[in-house]
Length: 487
Image (cartoon, rainbow, N blue to C red):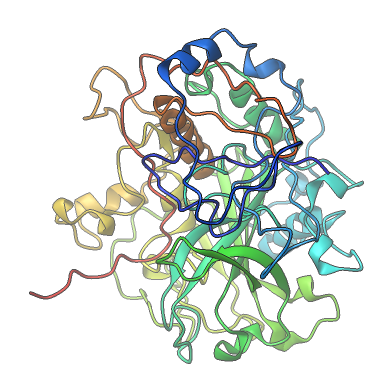
């Protein structure tokens, strides 16, 4: 199997080597020694030559599959399946809608969530080996696609399952018995309707310009599975765990990688649905292995569903950062929470709005995603910016809890570049971040090499469009920032 590998050039988002694993040897060459210096950035002359190469849209597989893979030999070697980026995006807009679009998500939210879950599972699960699940290229039921350019940077895609590093999992985030400071890794998949939009953006020579005014079509569906490296023995709901091997960092704070088991904790769903006041419906599931379902994926229990932010509810009575019990706010009208005993104790989001176990307990699914824009201006949550001097429920805080329609920019202006107005990426944080990664890559005259191939691969013009401004993407932060240290 031929696969792509980022080949250094992380001048600003620095990673030591390839995350602890040696780059595989190109055809006819030798892998660099463990202590060999990383490849240098191309010279200006090389960049000028790159400018005359064919447009990226004409390449068969223009995007790297991943950024980090364990070495094929020696300690920690890996010889199993390798992640393959699903990037043959539909060239014409698909016509068929997913079957759950006929279900009233307000009247039958549990039925709706079950239908979306099954839609995501079909063809992606039930393989004899769990390590073969959610490999989009092997799905014979329907096509799923990945967001390109997530290989870039120290949190970039690992090469076993294609997961990217997301959030720290602080002690007691998942259960009061949790003492381990862990981390989250996630893999997102997009159905054909969502994949069509991704292709329209990323198959253009200038993706940042191509996305302007683009929204996902009705029925676009995103499914994301999230795993943690927290020892299952510390979290009662992680009994009978569903585990994958992944090439992850040794801790959230490090960049050194190793092959290690991770456990399924959560699955998120997003559906573009005009029946919602925000034009998106979002749901999340939490793993509960105590249910002992024979099919481990069926241990994912609905946490709830939301279609709006309940902007008139401004009190803070049901915020519950410690998951000792699930506190359901009966005043909310645009969030529904599973009240059955199948759901393990969990913290939810701000004042009882929907959020998953590895998410921010003072945010919500929709609140976080509606800030998605390029260039990024505002943080995902007001608590991330002390200069806002905001408190839960005040006017500044509630700006993050309005019902903003999909495709509407969260910010009207960009203080870094006043001439350029931010554009909404239609609730897609992955699209917003990868556009910024692409800008960083271009500003660094970046290029990547294909392992096991002697020739370089062209990637666009190799020159930064004039509207790019020097800035750096922030990783997805799903938790509350740590308080400043006391002097």
